[in-house]
Length: 245
Ligand SMILES: Cc1cc2nc3c(=O)[nH]c(=O)nc-3n(C[C@H](O)[C@H](O)[C@H](O)COP(=O)(O)O)c2cc1C
Image 1 (tube, rainbow, N blue to C red):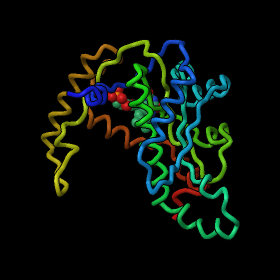
Image 2: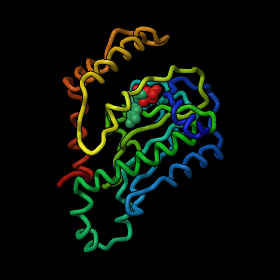
Image 3: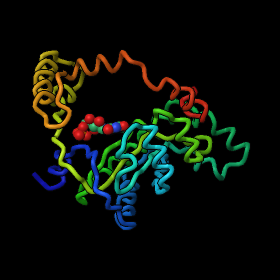
Image 4: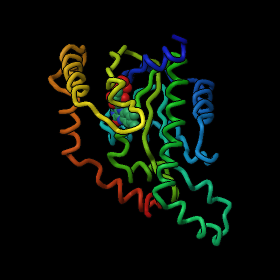
């Protein structure tokens, strides 16, 4: 196994960091690696924020309910960004761009571009011996986070990423069997594969050292999708000019 594959297959989220801050050089290496990800039609439809203001970090920690949003080596927020492409447009050009800026296609483009950049950042950080945790719960209060970052129209927060020097070694979390996520030519899901995975996950949750519990993957998903969350995201996204048509 080459060292990159080994790194990728050893990923686990880190939720406890030492107080050591990332150096400017480390931050720049991570962001430059993120930037080199492939990007739809060269749009580079994202902006990455580093949150260095301790007050903002504290508020984000409160919004997310997660201490590691405050206690880390550096905290990033990835945003979908189509403001930049409008910056030099005349009013007439902007109006001609709107159908594209506001459609679902470009909402997907920006979310995909930002995610690819983020995963490059994650891999870069992990290759430097750092740990990361993605933070989707900044969307607990998406409008407040948007305001905190002073985001213009056509820019929305998507997710955060806590990065730092790991202060614990979490267990590697099992993934679905390959047969459940890789299909050839047509959709075919074998329920037995899910049953086997549920057994494996039940065992994993029962024996893991932190937060051990009685659960299966499919039960977890059924519970999750029966409880609506963040229903304000739809309106916020649309109000900012995304996914409107
Ligand atoms: C977009 C995204 C958002 C996430 N948001 C959170 C979060 O808000 N808080 C958290 O503790 N973990 C968060 N995670 C981490 C996942 O819970 C974690 O990746 C998953 O359970 C698998 O565990 P592993 O990363 O240790 O393999 C997020 C992951 C992704 C990809």
